[in-house]
Amino acid sequence: MSTDPADEIAAALARLRGRRPRPPFPPEAHHHPHGGHGGPWGRGAPPWADPAHARFGGPARLRMLDALVAASGSLSVGEIAEAVGVDQPRASRLVQQSVELGLVAREPDPDDARRTRVRLTPEGQGLVSGFRGRRRDAVRSALESFSDAERTEFARLLAKFADAWPRD
Picture: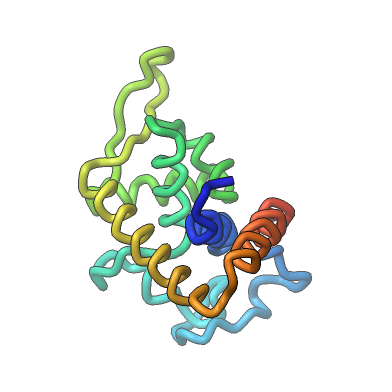
């Protein structure tokens, strides 16, 4: 564990970001509060799904960028899918959208010319650094009323909780 509980808490929150157990009901029965119609969102896609809105994207994209940072190098689409907790077609779409946004780049796999690997661009690295900094600052602010012992214990328990959280 890091010497700073805020860093550990921010990392645990990042692991939890967007991970929800699959609902026990069919996706068509789910209503998403963002309006629209059709699809698993109830009535249309969420606003962050459209790159035309000039927003970064959803939690899966942030988890993908976090996974690329944690890997300290390039990953295959299959490795991204596993790290993010999505299926391979969804990971492929995340990569394609992120390429279009300039956040990641594809490069040939040195071991298998039929495959590509994905790496962060400098723009993607800057975006992740900014998110991580804001997340860490928010955690530190929330922890101001905690004692040192409470911060350490909360970090330990939240990390344990995040590690046990279902990926499906």
